[in-house]
Length: 223
Image (cartoon, rainbow, N blue to C red; front, side, top):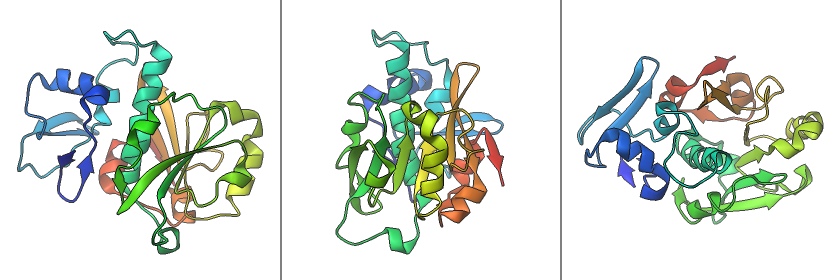
């Protein structure tokens, strides 16, 4: 883990190896920030927090020396997105039941392999993180984050209608047009780089508060 002012960002070398290569040997307690004007890097004591999401902005998804396929590499980065999103969003009090885990739910045919499972038992908001795989929107229970897989695109309208009956869920997907359909965050690919759009209206509907640092990194924000 790397400490920022009130934040920790996951820096497992297996997941963030390309980020370290970009940093070119700087100590991993340095601070990297992706803002609208580009990426900056500061060492310990800097006033900005660590953003390993910047990894996806640095180079194309398929620009990797590993033997991993481009699709697997893409979802490895997206898994890191999901975990790091959890650190920059605050949930309403009714979503923070004592004694329960922080759940990331994956709806549909998961493309993540075991990448998300590596984050299990990390601490998020004072809770142990658990990953839950579900096949129906009715099975999401007390999930704080819901990732809607591409396999569910044909059922997206039904899913979004069901989510309107619930509050306190950070809905995320890489299905094109997800934020326009009412989702909170849409992971998008721009010039072969992963970025994300945010729907502030959907965020407010769910009682979510998104940190301004995450908003500053967004590709597009709708209100």
